[in-house]
Image (tube, rainbow, N blue to C red; front, top):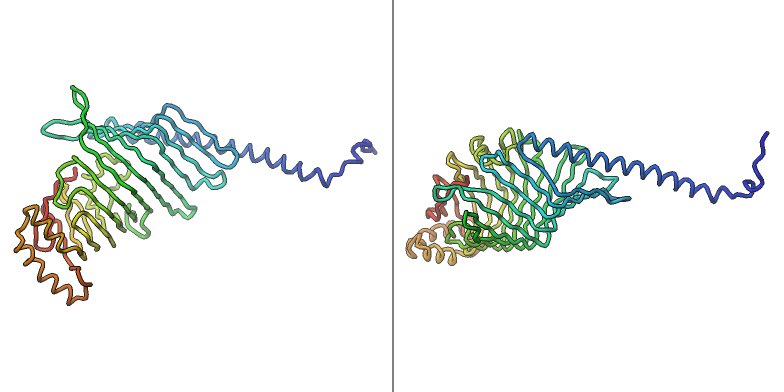
Length: 361
């Protein structure tokens, strides 16, 4: 029978074995981590191929993976999405995109876009197809995606201090053609439970939204102080989200509806809360009805009169009966229950035709 060498007899294995187990565990974990990284890289390439089959070309200047030991991180420089064969070709570009997830929780991905973004697109103007670029910068541009084992999915996004400028291109060069800004934009979305077909619950919140020279300015102005809405989108096209370029006309043809269970809006003289439903008519214009509670009635009347929509006397007569009725219905002082309707390209505030609605596509 062989005997252990004399030095081995003096080893205190109770002290060494824990370190041995830790070393073996570290090796096993490292092998697993690098296997996961390989799977992530393969999944990215598979996703790239899937998008190409849908007519969207995905490319980048460089793609790097890392994050060892606790995270899985993907850093992309010069990322691009292009739809050259869409009815109107478009390209999205980002200076940098970073996505990361915990190595032991791959169903939760956080995406950060810290640099500038650009969206190149075209639209018909004055009988010709005009080329535009939207340049976007922000202090925070963050998104989170969770896919639970039960099949529940959740998407959240948070954008802070967003600034957008639009440039119009021609053979003679580019000129500034409007811009927009937002103090904060937030979105939370998930598939709607027990809804037939493709449907989503979406919560929106926006603060300090403004724009200039992006189309005709309405009588309400171009500054939205606060917007908040709880919505459900139903009856989406069967091929959603593969054909995003034709989403609006497809949604109109399919009868897609946006049900708003609760909203709050502060837009210039408008201060209202309510609920309702809207869809697109055959010409691509919003169509629907809302039940609202409106405050700042004097400011609303003054804005409608200043815009030449109604006379001072007509506006006050139109709203006087509603104020009396609202008080009888228990509405708080200073507010009026006001039906809002969108029909045949016209927005009605109660009995007043307040604005013309243009097609969205």
